Amino acid sequence: MSPITIALILLLSGLAFIVLEVFLPSGGILGFVAAVLLVGSVIYAYLKCDIAVGTAFLAATVITVPVMIGIAIRVWPHTPMGRMILLDSASEEFADSLENSGHTELVGRRGIARSNLLPSGVAEIDGNRWDVIIVGPAADRGDLIEVVEVEGNRVLVTRIDETDEVPEPVSEIETSESLTTRNDEIFEDDPFA
Image 1 (tube, rainbow, N blue to C red):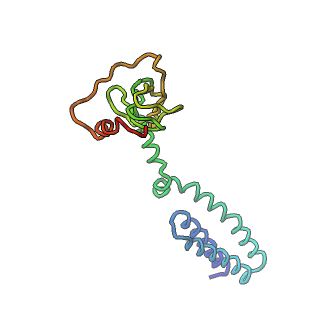
Image 2 (image 1 turned 135 degrees about the horizontal axis):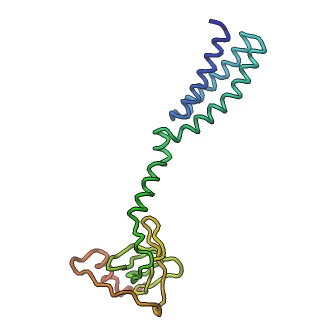
Image 3 (image 1 turned 135 degrees about the vertical axis):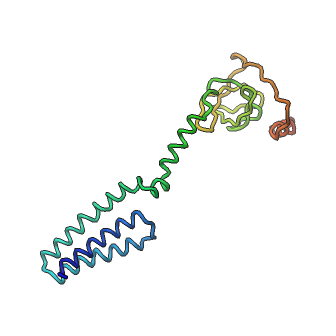
C-alpha cells in the first residue's frame, strides 16, 4: 500500500470519528481518537511522502474538519436522538395540545377570589375553582376578578373594582366537600390575613 493511501485512510477515518463524536455521546473518547488519527495522517504524509503532500494533507484537515463538524451539527437536530434531546417535536406537540385544550374561553369572564391572591391563589369562575395568578395589585378573598389571559395552564386575572358590573351569581356546588372547600372553611377566620 502506498504512503499516500495510508495517510488518506487515516484522514478519512479521523473525519468519520469526528462525525461519530457529534452523533454518539462518548465523553470525548471518539473526539480524542479523531484528533489522533488526523494528526497522525498529517505527520505520516510529511514523513513518508514529500513536503507538498504533507502540506496538502494539512490544508485538507484544516478545511474539512470545520466543514464536517458544521454539517454534522446541522443534521443532528433532525436525527431521532437530536429530536429527543432538543424536544423539538415534543414541545411543538405539547404547545399544540395546550392551544387546543387551553381554557381560552375564560378570557373576559369574571369571578370571585376564594383566597388571597398574592400573586397566586384560588378563584371561582362560572362555578368552577381555578388556580389563578393575579396581574397587578394583589386581591383579597372575596374581591371581584376578571380573567385577562390564559397561557397554557396558567390563568391570569386582574382585580376589578366593585363599582364595575357585578358578575353573574355563582352557585355553590354542595355535592361533595373537596379539600379546598374544607380548607377555606377552616381558615375562614385566619388571624394572619
